[in-house]
Image (cartoon, rainbow, N blue to C red; front, top):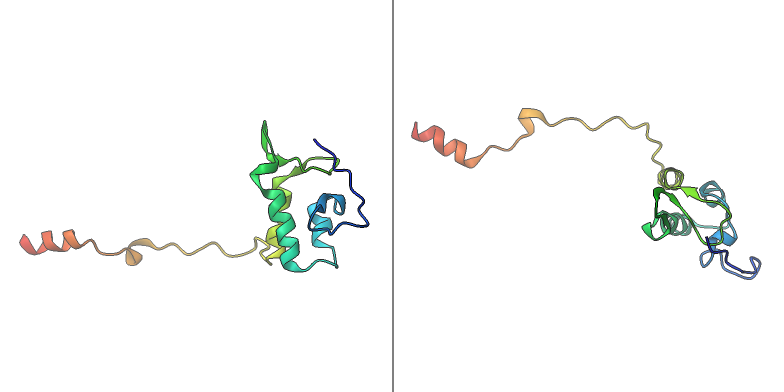
Length: 111
């Protein structure tokens, strides 16, 4: 992993967020960032560009001293969006929701 040599006091956190935040939770708790800015940082970390070649569920982000789990990044994004995974599962469609096949109706008339 490449360490970014930056002066954390002079850089905008959006340009080198790893120099300012050590985890997805740190990004979520950053009061100085707006929700869109947090989403930008977390989404960039989730990018395949940072995927560890032999373990795609990990992200190796330049400037961070450790790898970050993709699951942690995605959980932070869901929390940012207010989705806490406690939603009811979607209702099934079943037979009443299926569209009628036009050719089946034509076959029924010809019989």
